[in-house]
Image (cartoon, rainbow, N blue to C red; front, side):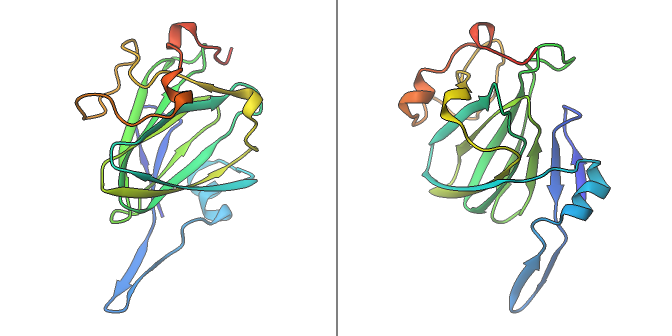
Length: 181
């Protein structure tokens, strides 16, 4: 396993060591001890989630204002552009974003710490997206930032509007959102 830094120091890309031969491949997708050794993070994951979405579906930018979730995310089928936005008001990177392509082919994962909004855009015909969280999902604490907030300026690499849920259409601009103090 190798850690690849991103443009925001707290967000990391995790590259597993993959062993492959004519039969296929094997890799350890998570190891608590190794993750802690490489990152200094001793995450206690309490929930695993799995979604499947079609091309141009955009999910996010979600976060929980109470019971914030750290997330370790990966793709097991297809490809997504995965995005993290710092929503910690007192952070030097507040309002900044970082992103990476996660795919079944590259097997990369991204660590998104608590205090970040998270979203992804499906770039393949469909994608299966898995993620571990450090706290439970609680609808009453979930917040959503508008995917195309011009103050954040995420380059999703698409023209037009992606397929959004009703909740995501109602996302707030960062300037109007409840964020972490």
